[in-house]
Length: 447
Ligand code: FRU
Image (tube, rainbow, N blue to C red; front, side, top):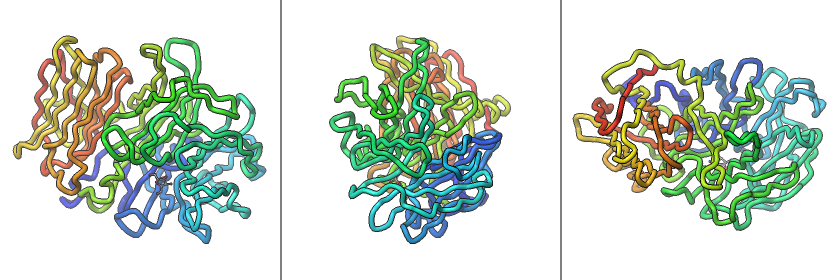
C-alpha cells in the first residue's frame, strides 16, 4: 500500500485496480461466498462492463478470482444475479451455478451463463438472449427459487417498473405481471431489483420485501435503495402500503445497487451494496481503483406504527474483525456508542488536526440521526458531494455501531432500525473523537 492508496479500505471489498460498480450474482455454496461485480478491467471509470469475481470463506476477507463473464457480440455484461440449481431444473447438471445478466448492446436483453466449477468459469448459454423486449431501461435480472410455487421467479427492472416472470427450467420465462406504477419514488430509473420472503420480527408472520434501487431520486440526491413490503404469490407482488409511501433502506448518500446472496445458510438474507453514488462515482479521489462495497448486512423486517420496515444489521461475521479495545480513533475501526439520555442529543464528532470533521447527532426528541460531511475533508471533486443526511430512527436507539474504514462511515442502530452510509475523504485520517452525552463509548481496532 502506497500513499497513493491512502483511501483503500482495510476491511471492505475493492477491486485490485480499475473501476467497480454494482455487486452482481451474489451466492453462497459449500462454505464460500461469491461476489461478482460490475467491473472495468481497463480503466478507472465506468466502461467495458465485465463481471469481476471475488470469493470469501467468512464474508469479510475477500480473494480476487479474476474475470468471470466478459463482453461478447450481444453486448457488454451488465448487472444480474446467480443461483445454485440444486435439483437440476435446468438440465445443465445438479449444483450448476446459473447466472442471468443483461447483455447491453443495441438493446438491453437478458442472457444466461452457467458454471459447473462452482462459479469460477462460465459458459454462455447457446440460445441467448432468453428475454427481449422493446423497453429502453430493461435490465438487472434477479432470479430466485420460490418454494411457494415450486418454480423460479425473476424480477427485472423495466424503466420505472419491475417486471415479474416465472420459469420451470431457467431458460423459458413466462411474463407474469408488473409492479410499480404510482408506487413510491419515481424521480429516476428503477434498477437492480431483488425480491424475498422475510419473517416480521416478533409476529410469527412472513412478508415479501421488494428491493428497488433508484437513480436519481435518492433522499439526498442521486442514487439510493428504496423498497416495498407486501405479498407475492409467485405471479404478482402487492404492496401493502399506500402508493405514496416511500421507504429507504439506508439514509446515506453512498448505498446503491443493494442485492442479497442466493442460498445463504440458516435462511439468512445477507445484503451488500455498492458504496457510491452516480452523482460523483467517476470522480472520487481514490487510486488505483474506484469504489468499494458496503460491509455485509443481514436484513429482516420490523413493524412501527402500522407500517413494516426493513431492518439492517451488520452481519455477525464482522465481530471476528474486532481487535483490541483502544482509546484512539484510527483509520479502520468500529465505534460502539451506548446512549445515556433519551431526552438530550448525543453528538459524535470525528476530526483531525486540519479541522476536517464529520458530525453525527442522535436526537431522541424527534427520533432522528444526522450526519454532516460538509467539512469532512476533500469535498471539492464534485458539487454534489457535500451533504447532510438525516434518518428516522423509528423510536429510541440504545446503541450505535459505527464502522469507519479510511474513506467510509457506516452508522447503524445496533438493533437494526436505522442505517446510514456515507463516503468521506479526509486529507489525513480522523484521529480525534469526541462523544457528548453517551453512557459508554467503546472503540475496537478492526483487523
Ligand atoms: C446500476 C446500473 C445497472 C446496470 C449497471 C451497469 O448502477 O446502472 O442498472 O446494469 O449499473 O454498469
